[in-house]
Amino acid sequence: MRFRRRLRLGLLLVLALPAVPATAMSRPAQPTQAAKAAALALADKGWEHFEAGRYEEALAAFRDAYDQVHAPPILRFVARSCERLGRLIEARSLFQRVVDEPLEASAPPEFHEAQAKARVELAALASRIPTLEIVITGVAPGAVELTLDGERVVQTGPLECDPGEHTVVATLPGQAPMTRTILLREGAKQRVALVLTPAPAPVTRSAPPSGDVPHTARSDVNMAVLVGGGVATGVGAATGLLFTVLANNRAGDAEAQKTTLLADGRNPCTTRPAPAACTAQSQAVNESRLYSNVAFWSFAGAGAVGLGTLIYALVHRPEAPVQVTPAVGMNDVGLSVGGAF
Image 1 (spheres, rainbow, N blue to C red):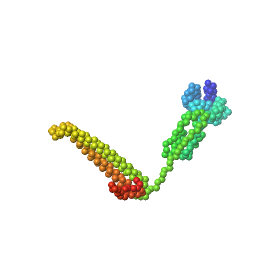
Image 2: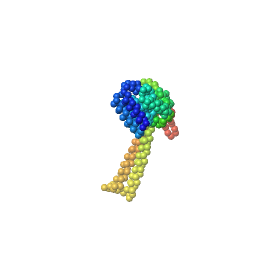
Image 3: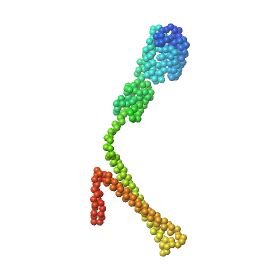
Image 4: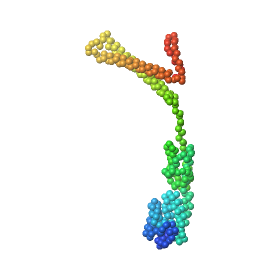
């Protein structure tokens, strides 16, 4: 209540002294009587909010009062409201304005008292403002775009910040941003290290002579053909083997059914209508032939692909000479192929 009484007294003095020089109020012109009355009502309202801990509302009321009358006691409580809200840097700036306010000796004593108290509060506030130092390693600091809470910063520290949570973002051209979130407490001196890795320099390759295919491209094509040919040969051979087994199984079934049908020395399949067993035996024979044909063509295809792959390998490996010589033995005749494959 002491502040409230002194503030009201100071404002009442201003109301009663319209001839106070403008320099005493640090204003270009004296406020009107209506403005002074409005400032007094707003200051009372701001004090009620301040006492109740409603600092946002107190700040708004004190700011409105100060807009009406630039009285140092009101500005001091604008600063105090910011300080209670944790906006220490803004509070420091406002306390400094109160301290720097040019007052004449004829100004109300409450104004001089507010200025003296603001000087003490300003000194006490200095040790409460935390600082943040950002250390960048791996790249030159100038190569990084650095932001703190969305605002671009040039220096890396120490940076004065309000207490609370802050976000640091470092961005290198062409790379995803690196983000760090820091919680600063009052009076803390914190350091955050960002280890960045520059993007690798692009590799400059000389263009091959016109019409030439790069060696690596040729190697890739050759490898693809050889691997594809090998796989196709293997698949064909495996398919042939599978259908050979199926053909043999069905041939065995057909033979067993035939033996059963002819067990009594006569062929029942010559009668009409023929028994169902005759139809099953005929179907087994047909399936055996079909599987045999599939096996044959699978082996033939595998052989053709394998031979083609071998010829391709021989033709497309000039850097590794291949020697083909006749191979004659006592029981066989063929070709001997030597070299690097």
